[in-house]
Image 1 (cartoon, helix red, strand yellow):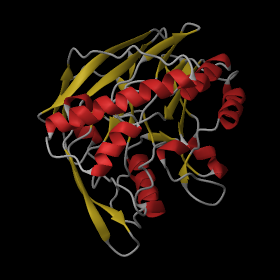
Image 2 (cartoon, helix red, strand yellow):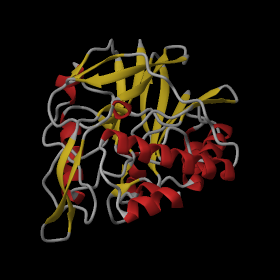
Image 3 (tube, rainbow, N blue to C red):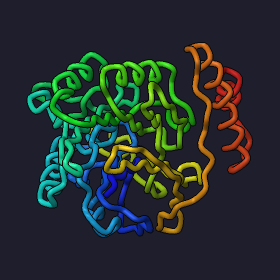
Image 4 (cartoon, rainbow, N blue to C red):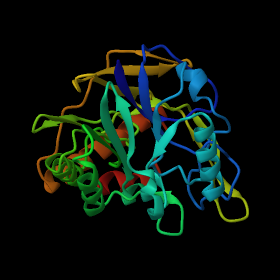
Length: 324
């Protein structure tokens, strides 16, 4: 028996997952409803149906809702998401209000041992955060997470934290995220599995514990959606073709003895299969180190985008390139 963790997943229809799966957990990147008040001035994502079971062949044990898109269609869509998940007997965590601690942690029996999983979303990803009276994601705030961990450490056998963090399109973690990850491990967390960058990020083993800073997109189709709701109408459109780095992912597995293994996958032509993918290895050793590497990576990204879609740069593009 294995417990498998998948990365960012957005299902606009049924896809085919050609993997051997027992129990699994994924990051559900958008609500299971497109009905509700859209969040203003952003790219709004939603799923108009429940396609998880038909895509994976079975329901997950639980899904993380701690991300920057789960509130894209407001409270109404979030509550409908809760309803659909509950009707399919799927647990969820990382979103709600402080009254229910954002449904953190979710706990379940795994081969006779108790696992706890908690999800949090970093403010830098521009999420809607919940509070005592408003629904939203659980804020990634170290003091609050440490409090949650302390409250369960003696009652469970294994703790997993799933943070939604990092810089999009960048294949390595922020230095500040490394610092947080180390403190979480020091406090008793057994495994960290990060999301949000939409590309695979580096892996670290700290004090014998795995930190997967970003496992990438598991299933994330091309985008062609209206965007930037101004309170009355959509004012723009987001069209994005997912390049190969946006269709590769790390899949993390936990066996009955809590041994951890992982492999890589490719999402292509509506299917997910195992594939050999290079995993980044760079980890920033200081804030300055991170800042300098980020400048370099942003310039590399701009060059790649120009090669893929050559067009004469405007003055803003030129300034952006040299200001990085």
